[in-house]
Image (cartoon, rainbow, N blue to C red; front, side, top):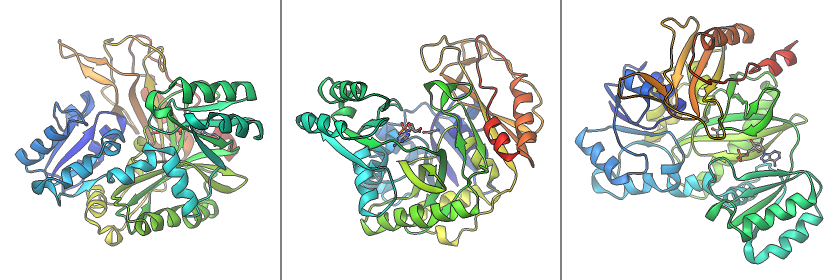
Length: 429
Ligand code: AMP
Ligand code: GLY
């Protein structure tokens, strides 16, 4: 098969690495890719939102399967666009339709979907600018902290957890009346704060049947001990000790089944991944959010644990034959440590040469924000630069492998969290 993978992050390098392990892949193209995907596949200078360009490329390279990494092209309707063109109308694509992608593209849509389908989630109300008075009055009656969410995509910044009523009121005004997050906050979801331990659950679906992939824990804050600003993700661990069989059974019965049944009942065309961000509150799962793609950096920890043929899984999703696929998962641990540019998630300097080790025992280096400069040297280009995944039959062993490789990597002002996985190690004692 000729496969086109869209995206340029650590997630896409991990997808490319996994796809190339399959005998079913003959040629792999990554658009636009990064310096890591350039080493193992063919990068294509196409933006993920250049729908015309993507369509042209599919025809010129006889692409048999398209795999969409990030949410943006999905929310903007790439799948519908390709389906509207005669030459690509039936092309297998991993990624939901525009309506399906609204589960991530609009928090209000996704909350209403959960309510209609009986999926447990935090209590909420949605407000627009002309309902500001009702919104402020609603805030008065809620307990603190309270969560304010911009309805639309806001580059991971649209969620505010307000500790005081004053802060909640002024934030609601800024979001609705002063477009704090632009168009994304023209609607705001005001939501109950859930306490518990957060978990990322990944489901592959062809819209009718599903397979639950390994779960992971993500480390979102920039600072050790979960302090400081939110980031795209600083590390991941899979499997997760507190997601035992009994808990995962509840996740499947209460969340996964009604979600997939809801997609089918509401005739939402969905062939792709559902990433369910959830809270384990006293042993019961509640959905925080749906994403319509795999997580990053969770993918870098989750995909290496899949032992069955990965292209077979992608084909099953895209062609509606997932029920015939046998998913095999390794019981071993994968742990991912993300190395970022100094200053991230604020502003940071780019273009520092990166030195990588020749050997990475028990681990693999995935590239995210890397590029080659004019002298063909590898340099940092984005905030999250590299994701290093370590493997082991024990969590400690996987972490040791990841950190041993991290310590052999350097560039000016590189930063990473040394405490990835430490909380889980403690829970296991
Ligand atoms: P999001 O940008 O939607 O991924 O949300 C960012 C983070 O905010 C989540 O990963 C949670 O840690 C936190 N969060 C969102 N909604 C809630 C909630 N209802 N209760 C507690 N924490 C939340
Ligand atoms: N790691 C969280 C995300 O991909 O949104």
